[in-house]
Length: 215
Picture (cartoon, helix red, strand yellow):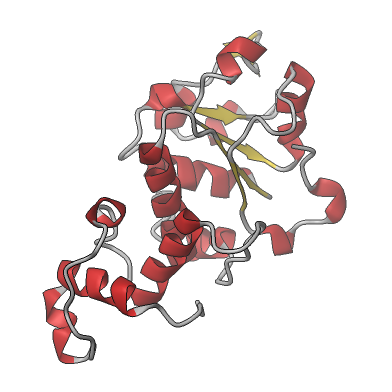
């Protein structure tokens, strides 16, 4: 991944989390760092750390473009157990976790072209975020044996079809994950434009314009 050059303050915060980098990061130490934003970044390299920091600080006007390998390709190649440790997925998950921690009012929608990617991201997020705060929106006729068991147990089912909860319940979820195509179910239940504080369009370059969401 390639991002803009990080500031001295961001490099300093990264260096505090990773003391062994002192030998090759030439930056003077300062004391005016905002520590709460850097709690969860232990897995990130300096460029990934900078990308998450940028997402959280809202530089300029959205949308923002995160350039990196497709998560779907990385997941299929490297993490068949659906842990989404692929690097682009790590950046997305760390940003979502920090957004979740920042405010009770935040509502995040994560959309991807394929179920495999949505499942991988949710599996990783579930390591930190309670299941009760997340909803995995599935297509009604998705094959249940293709859904990971740790996700399936929290998916509402009726007459062997996946259901979408009514609007009042949907509005309570802090994080919702869906494919682009299935996101219409949220719209049909009454989720209006502006409900979500943050929307992540994962692997957007690999989907068609017709497949994008309305929200």
